[in-house]
Length: 469
Image (cartoon, rainbow, N blue to C red; front, side):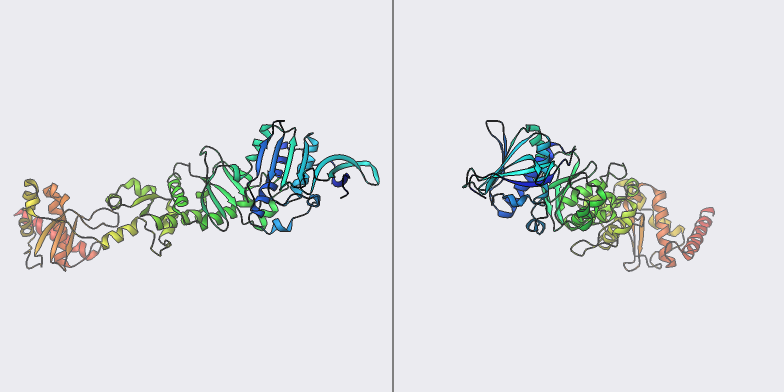
């Protein structure tokens, strides 16, 4: 460039992006400043308003050159994971929008100062296009680039800043190789979808916001020139990829809490993806003691629910469809995920009776318990000959397939019958349970078999005969 000379660089722009507001153009300037900050690891960009009312977007990088105005992909940015845009395209678009809205722009750097002007194309006097006007640097020692904007409003600048994760205030919950999960600072606002830190879409019914850093081919194709209003189908796969890589309770816990809302219809959209629901259950089970239950199981209110909570388990509500898949899942430590049947099996495997002595029984309970020998005689059973050395009472019993406490149990290895204390509340209940277990002891048959039914029928006949004498 000749000292003091004014040179013109044809931007080959007539009238484009007619619908772009000024905020979109400022967005491109801020994106370039943030990219230079990330690439050069220099100071944070500064966005300020001077006393004369002009807005400045300044970075402290290498300084813009007029060569950067060529409209092509920037190899340095295309190969980087930390930048927002493709330098050149956004800048030229921004200059065209500023010109259309009569915004005066000056780009200052140590390499030169650049403004814009409508001018006839060389050799085509009847065609006017936007040109960059390049002058020697007013401050050759200037570090970085200072873009000065006159004619933009404070609202324009505020709207432009809202496009950037950098200025959003969203809290980072977890980072993965595919991107980041963000907590929204305003729960009433939509979830936001960022691509490399730039807002491209909003999701009214998303639980989280997301910053996608690993862009696949479908998303790259969908990123239109405006880099906004991208359809969900373009980024759904990327959001799923982010969530499936998450391992923290900070992400899994809100997802699990949200699962309980599926019955009310208030569940967020991420939980409509089955693979995400299953992954959230896996992560949660790795970090917490949880038992996954269906709404119908909760409604039944079986004792095993109470036992699980007493043992410190958190009950997490899932759909029946999800519950059916959980017994095939393990957590990240290789332990199986517990649904209600899995919990019941584990509880029974570790079960120990809490036996109650006659001294601990109430007088009413003792009077019912004292019927034991008389009931056996009525059934024509000699307890010793039948191998029943004792009939004991327990506060706790194993759980049956419905999750209820078993009322009685014949233990041939211990030569004893164990009856749940609740049966001592009435003589009829106790006698019925005792006779049921005595039938097991005498016949050696198990529940739900024809042989046991036949033995029980025979015993009832004997009792009826004795009663009629």
